[in-house]
Length: 318
Image 1 (tube, rainbow, N blue to C red):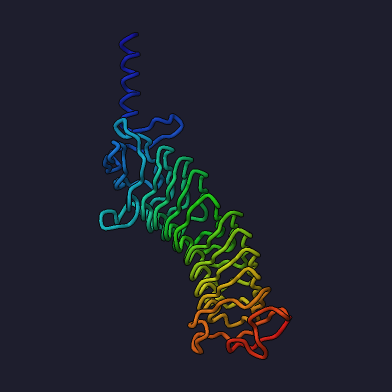
Image 2: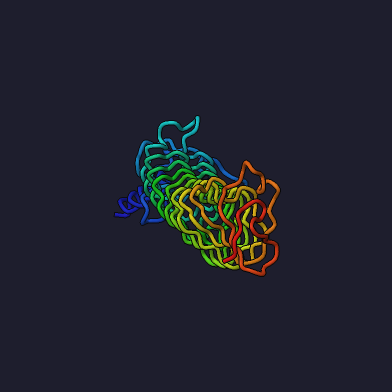
C-alpha cells in the first residue's frame, strides 16, 4: 500500500514538472513546447513556441522557476517562428507574468481569445499587432503601460477603453476597426496617432484631457461627432486630417494652440466654432496649400478674430 501511494505521488510530481503548472485549475502545455531563458533574477522568459496547438496554456513555472515574461516575438511571426504562431486561436497567460514583450503575438492572424491575468504590468510595442480576428481583450487593473502600436491593425476590434491609470504609447489602436471609445476621466493626453485610421463614429473627451497629440484621429473617415470639453489646451498638428464626414466642430475657450493642418482635407467641414479668443496658429497652418476652406465662427467681442476674414478664412460671429 505504501509503495502504491509513493508511486502515485511520484507520478503527480513528474507531471507537475513536465507541464510546469502550479495552478490545479490550469492544464498547462508541456515545457517541451517552449524555448526559454532565465533573466537576471533567475525567473523565466518564454522565447519561442515550438508546439503545434491552436489553444495554448502557458505554464506558471518551468523547472520550479516562475514564468514572468512572454518575450519578443515569442508567438509572433518572425524569422524563427514562421509556422506555429499564426495558427493559434486561444492563449492563456499565467498570473506570474509581468511583461508581454514587444511583438509577442505579432501577426497571429487567427487569434481570437487572450486571457491576460491580474499581475501583468506591461504590454509591449506591437504585442498584438496584426491579430485580425481578435475582437476584444480585457485589460487587468494591474497594467501600467501599453506601448506603441500594441493593437495596431486589429481589424476585428470594435471598442476601445483608455484608463487613467495606464501610460499609453503612440498609435496604440491605429488601423484597427474601433468604432467607439470610452476615455476615463483622469486621462490627460491622447497620444500621437492613437485612433488614426480607425472607424470611430463619435468621441467625447473628458474634462481632464489637456493635449491631443499629432495625428490622434488622422484618417477617421467615419467620424461624425467630436465633443471637445473645457480643459483642453492644445490641439496638435494633423489631429483631424481626412475626417471626411466631420461637418462641424466646437473649440473650447481653454484651447490656446492649434497645430498645423489640424483639419486638412476635412472635405465636408463647414464650420469651426471658437468659444474663446483666437488661438495661436503655426505658420504652416496658414499656408495656402494646406488650407481647408471652412468658415471660422467666434463670439462677438473676444480677442484676436477679424472680419470678414481671419488668417485667410471666412469669419463670422455666432
